Length: 381
Image 1 (tube, rainbow, N blue to C red):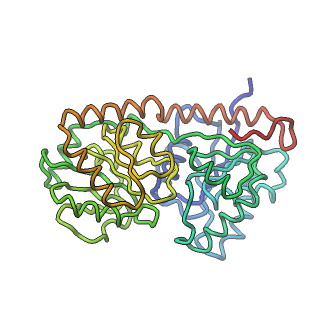
Image 2: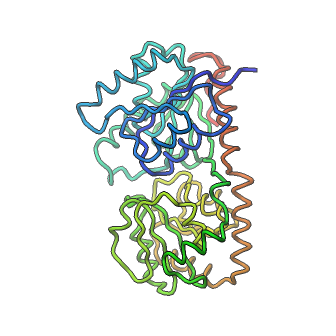
């Protein structure tokens, strides 16, 4: 049997607080480790997870791509690192990380000895809402998508969207995100403590909406829906939420590091994204905490939620409000049962150990294949 990789270098765009970044942090710190040695390279400053990674013994290298003058030196530094460390696998993470991994691996002179993987972490993006850098990265990635030995996607919707965009991978695999079911779980003590801190009664129905302020998250639709439901309170959590317009039934918490605790204090988890979501970590984390879910029909929301919540059309505040109202009208016992189904669904299908096992098997499979040109290296599944 092919052994696990000796060394893996992950190249990520950055480490701000987000679903893609959180999944990478969970993946590289999971025990037993996926490789004898793991190095994480961040193109941008590694803001949110760097201390956690280093405390877990994962080497973190920051390249300074936040400055235009740092891009070329950063690529050369990455190429030298790959040449020196001689990893079995280099895996890109998000568009800019994918491209940097490819370029640096070629520059290192090790392309014929090191496997290259890319990672798709979103579904269809509305690129008109983003800057030139992202649009260029997506276009370049599409053009170069046959170069990696394998492309992973965290959702069926994400892979489909990129194939429609023009991606032509030699091989592709879908590995859903994995949720830390020990960190995200029902917690009555946290529920009481958070509600006491925020002055919210036990009887009040609380929604948790956890998302940075970004066009894809569509806070506006959520706020419009919530304006129709004055008796319901919502936690808005994520970078930029502290600057959203105030309202009597909104608690604007900004960026927080105690997401599991906040979710445990809620009754329903909500995602209002209008595009771009592939596998919503927040929905799955809320469900792991025993919360029914309400989500817009983006990415793999339907397959995550199943019968443990409601899926509504995108950018439709009326439909979103109606779904919230319907769950609010259910008895506490009915919502509790729905929440139990939600947690069971995550445990059965989307736990972190399951995701790590999938990556472990994938890496063995990749190393068992010859490098580009081998017979059979072409299936998309």
